[in-house]
Image 1: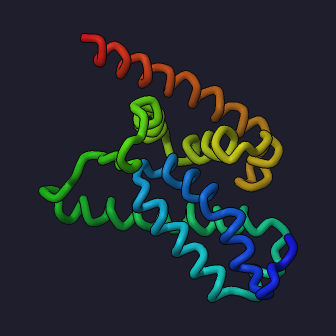
Image 2: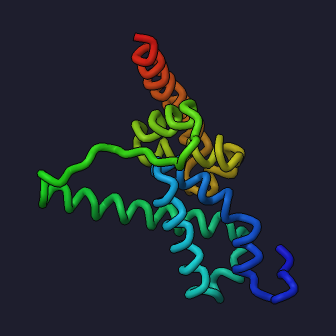
Image 3: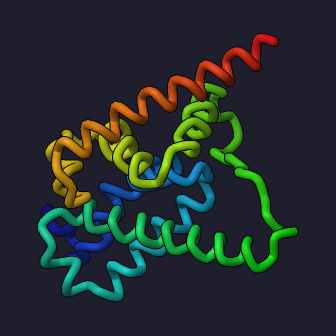
Length: 170
């Protein structure tokens, strides 16, 4: 990527990738404000690890990996807290912002029912628009694993989307 006139590579990547990364993380976590926070935190990490960030060839993939790891850490802490304080457990709250179409909410809900490895695979392939080979490379898994996860996700998500559609028509 070319550096902007101000010479800041982090700013250049921010301008090009911020929206895409937020969209991908919102699909993973189901919460737009949380996705924005996580992506911002990933960019802060890029700034604090500037030398590593500048040297990496795919900066957006680097940021996405950092963001997904941050999300995993949040979920891990939440699970530990939930075990320690069971009365504070909260159900999934999907918040994609005002005016979000019901179809988007339904899809994010269906995504939230998938295991994290399958959900990340789906988001990278369908939302980040990466090929099966690119997803396999980014997740360091064989292409067959990516294909199996995508097939499993289609079946599971179809079940959740059909259940939700039937509930809406009752």
